[in-house]
Amino acid sequence: MRPDLVVSRTTPTTAIMMNRGLPIVFVLVTDPLFSGFVQSLGRPGGNVTGFSVFESSVGGKWLALLKEAAPAVSRVSLLFNPETAPFADGYRRSAEAAAPTLGTTVVSAPCGSAADIESAFDARAREGSGGIIGIPDTFIDGHRDLIIELAAWHHLPAVYGLRDFVSRGGLLAYSADFVAIFHRAAGYVDQTLRGVRPGELPVQAPDKFTLSVNLRAAGAISLTLPQHLIARADEVIE
Image 1 (cartoon, rainbow, N blue to C red):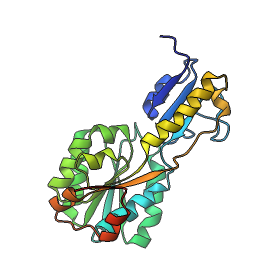
Image 2: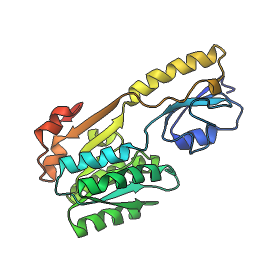
Image 3: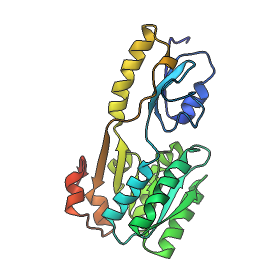
Image 4: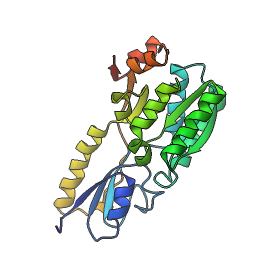
């Protein structure tokens, strides 16, 4: 097709498009520096730039929200696939740093298959007082329905890094505003097509996050969400 520019969505897609001689504006990439897409965030270099999804510090925020929603939670599994989410350690470290203050323990739960996901849920349900964090990872998103179903089946509160989990029946999500990111990316596309090299445009972090809650999902696991949490939510599904 010989495009003048490629807009690539997610880390795996961007990895495939790298080194093909095409200008790239990426979106929804978690850690472009760790993934080797750019030389630095301020001066990406080469022919690529774009918009990241999260800073790793959000791992502690997910844990705090989960504990606020379900105070009895004391042991939380962080779901990720090491192949599709090599950046997961940043989220894990952030969550582990927040854990002592919140009276919780964070357990890494690397998953490479549906069976691994089921095992992670079985472990949390078996030990009691369990919770789940599902990071923004293409593998986790690809198993969204299974994860939501298992959380409901085992009566485990869960928080996710992607808003779509809540609209499909998940309990909580704290997510970058993806629509806003795509709107901002249009400006970089415009500049690139006008002759600016992508590598001269700094990588941008999210500037807007949304909190979504699903009251129906809470009721299904016999959980009453605190009113102050509901009041803060940008989206409430009843």
